[in-house]
Structure formats: C-alpha cells, structure tokens
Length: 125
Image (cartoon, rainbow, N blue to C red; front, side):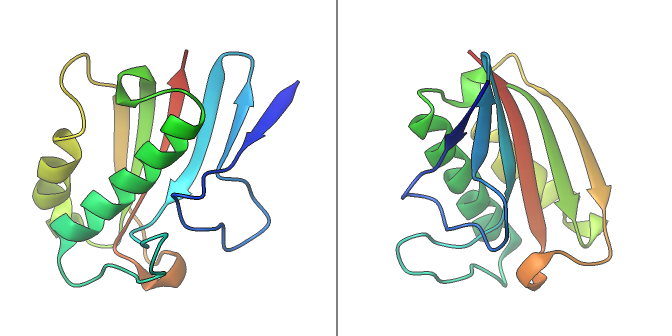
C-alpha cells in the first residue's frame, strides 16, 4: 500500500507526480527545487539561498509525513554546475546534525525551470 503525501508548504508539483509517497515506513520524496511555496518565486542567482529553499521544501514534505531530517537515509543532489558543490554542500549540511544519510551528487545538463540544484530524499520512520 502507498499513501500520497502533499504539503501546502512546498511548491506544487509541475508534472504528474506527488510530493512524496509513503510505502510502509519508507517515504520517497520527489526532487525539490528552490521555489518558494507562498510566493511562487524561484530563488536563483545565489546558490546557497537556492539550496536553502530546496531544503526547506524537503523539510515541509518530511514534516507533513511526521518526519524530519533525522529520518533521512538517502539523498540525491543534482547540480547543473559541479563548481557549486562546495556552496551547496555547506548549506545542505546545516540541515543535518549527525548520522548523515548516504548520498550522491551528480552534474546534469539541465533541470526543470532552469534551476541550479534539485534534491530528492528517502526517509524511514
């Protein structure tokens, strides 16, 4: 069985997908971009601020499922420019305190809405 998780505090999906799907005790969170849910504004130009918004969107979805970043076991980071790795990593790291999740970071040629970073996570209760 699966349960669809939707948060009003994260931007609406831009395609036929859900914010997240809970299957058993595992939550699969779709890739999030730096779009502010309240204003609809894309946060671009400052990679740290963009990453912060991405992580806040992930956090809103985790919270909707009754979880937080301590439940995250796996993340995937997509970057359009690997030169942004250090700045993204610095901001990303502020959302985790210890027992860091497994992760990969990959460079891609383009992301939806022409953003610079997209992050998806898997979390477990």
